[in-house]
Amino acid sequence: MKKELQQTIEIPEGIEINLEENELSVKGEHGENKRKFNFGKLDVEKKDNKIIIGNKKSTKREKKLMNTIVAHINNMIKGVQEKFEYKLKICFSHFPFSVEVQGNQATIKNFLGEKIPRKLQILEGVEVKIEKEIITINSINKELAGQTAANFEKATRITNRDRRIFQDGIFITNKPGVEI
Image (cartoon, rainbow, N blue to C red; front, side):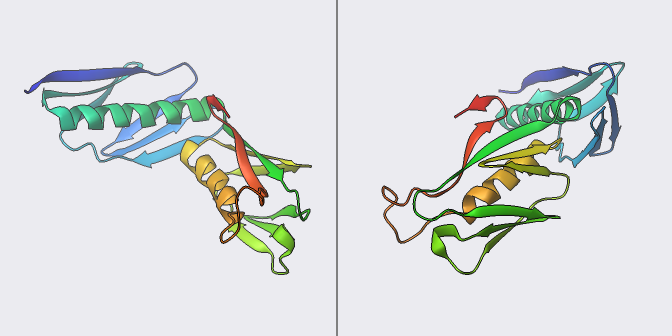
């Protein structure tokens, strides 16, 4: 069944949003966030302090696409207002290992007694701070911050050993909006 659907997003004060064809850029006090969208059959326009996304004859597909785009735009607005923060914890019981950050690369030394250090990529636009056993990741882009946190977890993944005994690694403890 086709019906008219539309959603509006309020633009808070101190935030500039530019919409050019399918590229949306959001500027705020912490920086600028840009993203290209595939709007498909949706009509997107900016009026006064609102972004209106809708379609005259929407199906389930347009409704899903509209909700996804609204969620992404809200995350972009939240990111330039206050940065997204992930916290990770370094846990070890067998071999103490260390984590060092040099530029856009992190090195994990002596993980499970390995002689060759494990390396991972820190994505551009992400800040990483290490304080003893807590790693803090900050970024205005939620996806980049989440991917960097996942890279840390993945770098210390253990295979071919009993997970009940070898519980070493780096694990996410706090995400934006969720405390684990």
